[in-house]
Length: 260
Ligand SMILES: Nc1ncnc2c1ncn2[C@@H]1O[C@H](COP(=O)(O)OP(=O)(O)OP(=O)(O)O)[C@@H](O)[C@H]1O
Image (cartoon, rainbow, N blue to C red; front, side):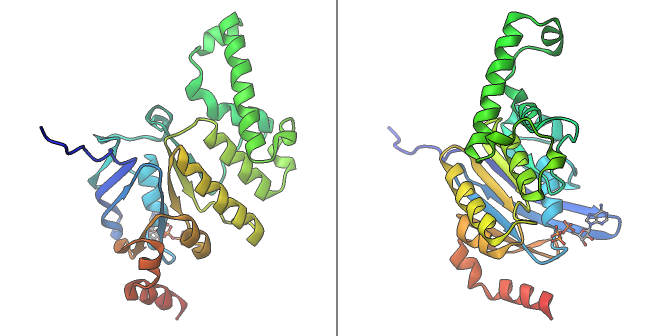
């Protein structure tokens, strides 16, 4: 009898991804694997292709070639509205909060995946929809509480400073209890202390989800990630642990080249 067991399916697999914008090759045969229960960072100098890669993983950009795999299944027609069904959630640089909805309602939108009652049942006010609404509200409040902002639930996001709005966006992504969280430059606009807190938070998520962290804040990436993929001019130039990547001469060259 064989004693070998299959490796767990990747939380996300990108293989041979190429994206072109007109004549410009934004991604050239890029491959990476986000393993379950890990944080996988994507870094690179300006214009390296990080955001384009993030957009491919979210289904915003359809690659010209290559395959996106989740849980061992190929996703040839991935679109952003598929993410909740696939156990994926994302935060965006632009946050995407609804200005006229309270913080609590914004987060409840993220919990939709767990609601089984459809729109009409909710509109008719069936007892089941009330129960679900109450359960969603509790989940949303718990997500806000976990990020230390439950007291802001009744406020409008526009009344809050940017770093706090970022927390609301993160609560909205986490309330769906995704198996894979995609974070696009979450450190942007945060203070050093807030970035430290964010790093601790992202690390603490790995007991229940995998994280793809696209970020150019080097300290955050180095202290938070299990594995890092480095892009430059749309190509993978290095991949490994933070220590391996930091010592890789190709990575130093790419960043020094940017500074020159
Ligand atoms: N919609 C688009 N149309 C044309 N070119 C684009 C488009 N989006 C990105 N690009 C180009 O593709 C390349 C990769 O851009 P991308 O934004 O993915 O890089 P990045 O690593 O996220 O950069 P940054 O750190 O500056 O945000 C760049 O040369 C950029 O100008």
